[in-house]
Image (tube, rainbow, N blue to C red; front, side, top):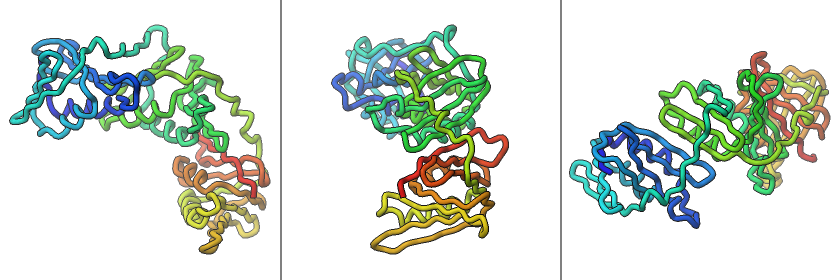
Length: 366
């Protein structure tokens, strides 16, 4: 293999794929990246057998071929070079790199030992093209409620599914739940995408990308952003029937400015660190306020309140971190906060009619 490529393109491609190359593995080849010519392009790829990332970059290919190289060393070395042309040449399974006055030889491995990159049959798959901004918002709104508990794998990802002609994203960790309606669909979809996969997709979105193409088959999902492809296994299992957990109505509904809610929650959270983040929210219909009370036994206590529209008096105790994270992803300038008593789940959402998102938090035992 022999070719010439620009340092900027190679650095970007190596940065994109090298994150999934695993150093903690019994298969040393998985800590490598694959370099392989494809016509007048260079394929740069890495996989950990759960997720694979490939990126194509334009190159002047003098001699076709392929090699695998240690991911971390290659990525850090190329990123340290000046922004000039980089010559890559394979000699006896070693990669000779030359750029200006810089010369290096990196020991490589035969490309035949690299795992076969996964593929998806486009003709038999379900496909969506989604605007980048909609995709990023929907993922950020749901990914925060995924679980880290590997004993319940189905909760460690985001559930993409069709329901009554719409594509929804949903996630829960057992303490909170989020749902976002994304686009209309005529297809039947039911797939749980791992959190790590969605995080990698978000990291690989570039400023020049307008749309993301998503393909589902029975066991895999593929994301394509310009010249970058990410293919991941889906999580096997059935996602819980979460819609039965959504309250049909609430005794108390509070509407207030999102910025005010964020501020009083943040302040209350400072005093709630010792008590596991526990804060008590009180809605006062007569005073037309929502107040948050928190206690730090060693340092003192705090009560912060904000003006609000209140339907009836009520009180509930929540985890301040869960509340802060929910507020950080709810859209709109005003939010609706609804609950029934001290033990029923509360619902947080925007008051905008076109809002497609809601967030549920289970209360703490006060």
